[in-house]
Image (cartoon, rainbow, N blue to C red; front, side, top):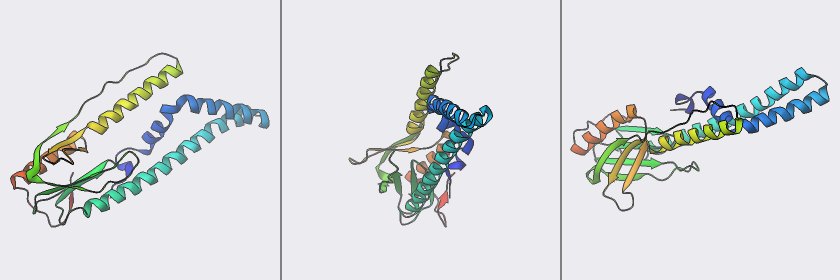
Amino acid sequence: MKTITDEISKKQMYVLALAPHITVWFTLFCIIMVAVWYFSKSALIGFGSAIAIPAFLIKWGVDKKILVINKLLGDIHAKSLASLQNIDYFYYNANGSISVDSRTATISYIKVLPTLEVLPPVIINASDVIEFYFYDPGMTTTKYYGRDMAVAQEVLTDNLKAIGARAEARGVHIKVDDLQHPKIVMNMTAKEADHWTVILRKLIDGSLDPTNAPKLIP
């Protein structure tokens, strides 16, 4: 099964935990350094503690997040494989999953809410698919070269929001002849979508070969 560190390294997760709140961590650094320096009478101990304590808190938070997301991925994996009577190909990540059954020409789509709630699968007949396509909205980010930490943090926060908005919209968009679910979006990269646009095309035209066991693509 997948783990979150297959997609992003621990080091990157530590940076993402630190960067949006850099002024908060800097303030905590200063408070700890002054307090420990005052009570220990050692600048070295104060500085070391000011580095070690925030680092420990960041690591603890990231490690806890990794456990939560890995559990979520395991849940999505299990629910994806149980969503159809037969599954030939499937794909999943922390945002949801898509699975197909070539024998019955059906698609299963599972969405994960921002609250990490995994919704029940939406089952779609291939004949009800109006169109599908890969969409990547792109994004605009800002570079800041000044020394104002507050402005730098604001720019960084805006950039991270832009990256998140792009990731949320990027993927295979499927329009369906269904009043309850007229459109679904399976988040994935362009490289992953290259596989899934072929799978969906073959599923719809009836040329998708069945497999002996569920196959994770890509």
